[in-house]
Image (tube, rainbow, N blue to C red; front, side):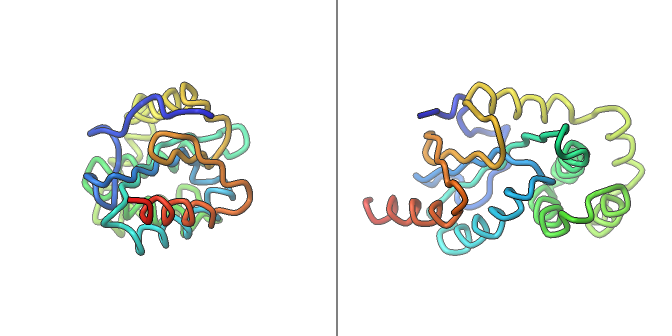
Length: 176
């Protein structure tokens, strides 16, 4: 079984309870249809158990299969640099079928952020190191597709049933 090689830390985007004993990490891609299917399950998990779970999202854009995945990650990072990562994260998944420059501009404007700044970030690869660090950490941890989940540092394979993730967290909570 694969283990998470880069522990969750201050470099991560974390929601839920950062001090929780249950830590869920997802390596994901905003254009991946499976990540899109996992998104509402993770949202339900956090709605039910957000006080008991820390959730970190790490970028793993599969650009050969998903040409907008990298730019969507930049959008999330640009918003995140200004305190709006999770709002952008949600909007990107909720509008997964419309990923592209028009959506990115609308999203950034809706957050009250500068669209010109986003374009500069895209043009200058401003968040390339951040995204590549996530990807390299994923590769070191055995990630070869998305979504890839790690529950308390251990790879958790959901197969086609993302509900097993919710079940596993609930079992961990009951065993405490």
